[in-house]
Image (cartoon, rainbow, N blue to C red; front, side, top):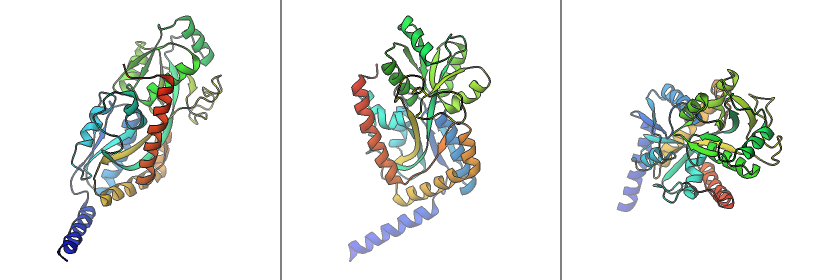
Length: 318
């Protein structure tokens, strides 16, 4: 009887805690520098949550070590729902294979909240580079092996892996230059310090539209609505090529299920708001939510898929 009463008391306290949540500001960690896709989506969600709940949701950029600095911070934070992270393909499905040491377990140390959406990348070039399409890029790279450069928003990030897959399929050697986020990568690409990138749509759209970068091809399976005249890489000669990124929200493991479900419901509501969907779509991001269980199973499946792919083409962090 005493054990039963204790259990009832614990459940009552958890339920009351979930009802009161959030009672203080929430920290949403973006493990990349400002200016990229994860930063954009995180800030849109944070603002909407702040408005709806009357509690500040503060975005905190913690870039570095291929997003491992920010995610380790969240993994080791109290599991109370007040510290969250924006998870993406690289840190949550690739780092475990790419690096010999990752300071967290992408499955064991986090509680998935929801998928937030999917986006493809666009292959862009500095305007000074004399290429207009994939065939010309491949020809130039073969004429200058190891002399051309491409930027990514971090080793193991989707912008890095998409270009590595492109290199492997095309049989070319282009040097990888990693940055701490899409913003710094685009800054050096604009300055001509690096020549190419498979950039996120959020980073590339305004720069391509302004003529400051040249769009070569889209990395996804289909053409992008924002660039209907730009062919996919597959259409451009590398049949079957397709690489997409995904994002989601995660909390530290052992965060109470009631808090996870409250977060899930609110973020799902936000992502269904027409104005939010339109704003994210304008940056090339297809907003969509999921259940926590589906997102967790998806991360596990993605981890297995990318481990097989990376081992197959021999990619490891240097």
